Image 1 (cartoon, rainbow, N blue to C red):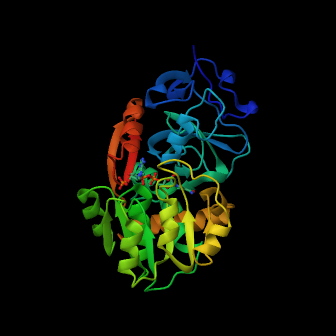
Image 2 (image 1 turned 90 degrees about the vertical axis):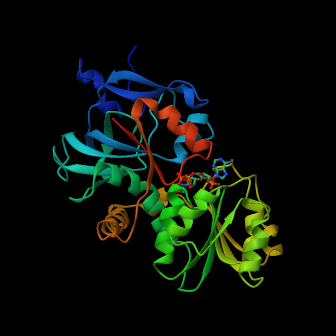
Length: 342
Ligand SMILES: NC(=O)c1ccc[n+]([C@@H]2O[C@H](COP(=O)([O-])OP(=O)(O)OC[C@H]3O[C@@H](n4cnc5c(N)ncnc54)[C@H](OP(=O)(O)O)[C@@H]3O)[C@@H](O)[C@H]2O)c1
């Protein structure tokens, strides 16, 4: 049996091009990493406003695990993968911005764990010469997330102290660099001494190894004040204690749920803990139009090209072994970016 990509628009069914086959990871039912199967599929076809891209590298992101397990819902069957980079091989009838042969990358698309991916033009950015597909696929989603967290949530000034959980993770290493380059002092948490070394090498000033009583340690490191901002992508296991690590009138930024979703919060808690602000931002809202997408992607690619931003690719797996990549990510065995290559 062959499968179509669930996210193709009705105008662009692969059935219009019988006989063109490709390969993709397919999830027929939600569950553990083993539900991801490498299958022969019909090659998708770009419709209006879309590109067909031959994948060079696909990024693995924690959101892919939420969709695979059913924590976030996607229509079944589907191909996971929010991010990738590669070469345009065909364009939809009305597309003028890109042409076959162009190198592009994208984030917050669908169906990225595949040899061929249909990418909406509104999500595609050009990859500059000198940046490989691997670097582009490693940098875009987590890099633009780090970018909006660093620049577009709270006004932060040199000398401000922030706490960032999972400092050796994909977002963690990039966000640490973006903040410390501006003179912001970054405290991080990590689970192992090896991860601590990595976090320090990205610029973290103090690294808390293990999450036990991290909130007390942050108070000690800030003269009892607490952090101006806490960036928490861990979620359920850290959220309550993260609020205790924020200083009075500071900001709690919950941006993910690596340990599981946070239960509902009573707003009175924010008053009791010092008139805190709480936000739960999503990248989609910070690449809302072409100008904002280009601004963030250009900043990230320029920082990579100049050597200011080091994108650490912690592990690369052959795409058919995506299950192994998810298993390692969820078991906290990875650092930096996790990639799939064909
Ligand atoms: N809001 C947005 O738009 C947006 C965009 C991108 C990513 N995110 C979020 O950002 C967070 C980081 O994403 P990422 O892709 O860069 O992942 P990552 O940080 O590379 O991996 C997750 C890390 O979380 C830590 N962690 C703590 N408790 C964990 C648990 N119970 N299970 C698994 N990991 C645990 C681990 O680091 P230690 O071993 O050091 O604890 C692990 O390496 C995720 O929550 C993701 O959903 C949000």
